[in-house]
Length: 139
Image (cartoon, rainbow, N blue to C red):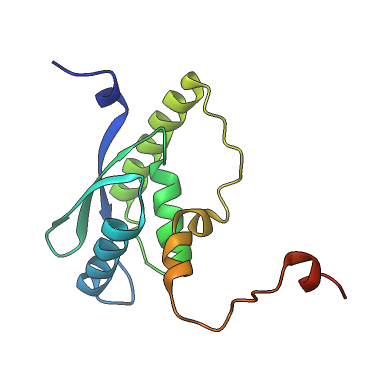
């Protein structure tokens, strides 16, 4: 018997294509989604170009997930079949979210910042300014 939460779980595939080797993109995306995105329930490799992703649409949508991967530098497949699949997924998920009253509080741009913010914070880099905000904005 299906629980109420199972109605919001989606199993989708992400297909990679592009100038980089699909296998390299697949491996990097698999590691990133598996370890860094709490909204993702499961990630499985499916061949050389595909990832099977399981997530809850109340937390993240397919459009947000794909946009975040694109912003970080991955190249998604843009064949006709992929475009049709993408449009169907997006329409269905947007309809369910609208019916639940989950209004998008931000535009689709900048999704990578929201989705991958934990990974960025854990990286060792010199882009951190530890001064309080009022001191950083003083001038």
